Image 1: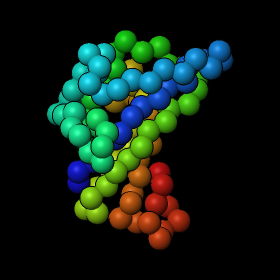
Image 2: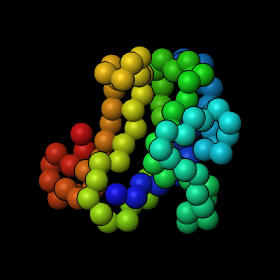
Image 3: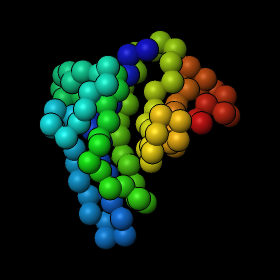
Image 4: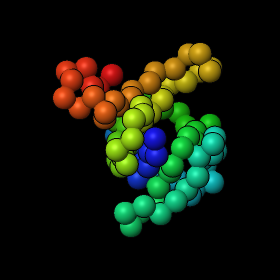
Length: 102
């Protein structure tokens, strides 16, 4: 599946400080991903991570563009190791099912 995430906005802590991090920022480490132009925006296709973020509680906003193929696009956060993290993913191919969002 070709997943394109257009932007990531983090609202950190109780002070509600919003920070927009474009994917061509040097703060991102690309992990099998690439930054591309899609629908007039700089986007991430694949995976990337932030190592220098102090995220505790707040809001993560992102846009997803899909090409119709089967897959599970999502976002992982609060990762402390490769086996310890929280993950939200979408099942767009299961759009009519009640469990399409996991």
